Length: 327
Image (cartoon, rainbow, N blue to C red; front, side, top):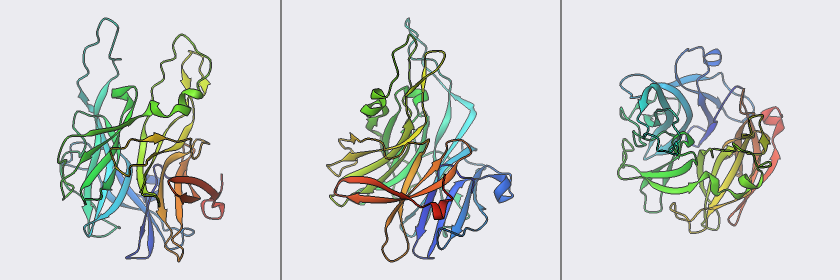
């Protein structure tokens, strides 16, 4: 099953798993920018995908449709999806005498919301604009509801604007149609110490951006807040002296249990060009937690793992090759 940025909704109301990903015309039969969904009752046999969301007017951006995810919020199914518009450029501050900020072209990119009465859609836009600030290049927004019941969007702020990409959060209105306040900073990509430990020997031109992707939140048994997120390793030198590496699934912990942190970065959960993972619970009797990631980054397929959650920690378990085909 071709899929990138997978998201599984284990829907108790229907007893089905809904696996959302960006539309692939060759699979769904519809050549549209949007979201498609596979359905299964056992994680083994899946339906052919169908399109459940189409990016169209009056939405302010209609390209991409990356990282779709569906949450049940106050009895409605809410789709969050990243859309962009490469023609709608964003202003970049003029460089100073040192050439800073680095003049990287910016364009409209953000997380948008849509709503449906069923996990099978159709999902219709909640608003024309993004939930993320319109002058931010932001992506991969996910829903978090704090202990007071207030909704937040947690998202990645692109390295294309920041060089050192960040994870941030913004409060939402109760209807999830718009932001309800100003964003807050959670952490920078470079705070993961293992990233700099992996760097190859120094060179003259080793400007290495720090990518932040795919935040996902879960509550640990200890009460701590755990965040999955993804980035690229920095363990190979290129011919020009730059550094590169494969996609990595990593994580962080806020022992305070609060979204604001402080966040402590952990060693990666999974390498092997794997990432953009999320956790869901099986619909069978034991409700065990499962981790789904995509691998490799290009021509991605979904990979399933058992996941152990103990105290404030995570430990990757067995890959469920009988379900995901291995690899």
